[in-house]
Image 1 (cartoon, rainbow, N blue to C red):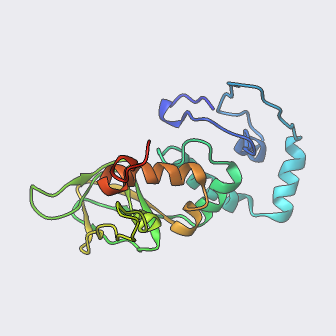
Image 2: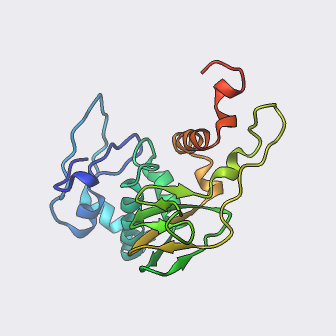
Image 3: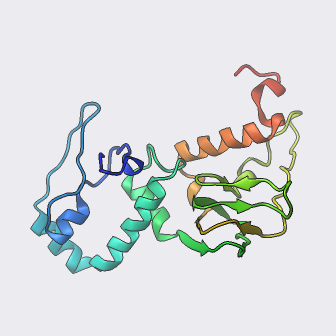
Length: 209
């Protein structure tokens, strides 16, 4: 999907809907779609789709969810190989928190938290690490059983104190139970976990990569 904004250009996969907002509002699509392989597409008359949405859904509510979908799809975790149906479920259960500079954020431990915009400091003072756009936390519990000796080894705990916004931040929070069902996202989370915790890397467990 190509747009005037390069940051909004991304890959779509089987099950994705094209030009939905254009169909609902009865105007030309603002995006251009280019195939990168064999594609079989089904074309639906826009007036029939509008009638379907108006009859069974709230078009305004649906479009609000689609806006959240678009925000999620712009991130590294959800940019590729996540179908529209899966992304819709995530968007419906996503909480977007806006924090201004100096405000603090303490997330639910049952959720994955992702920075969509801005920066967060993980502690006080100049030595504290800073998280920026596309960085995330809260997923380590998905891999707690991984260790170097085959015995469960808990991952390092997340900071108990809240993070502090260094500028205006958007934080997306989605339930871990939904994220854990998406293979490509789970793999990205595991790669990040493996890079952060050496005992999780195969070379430390004596197995070939």
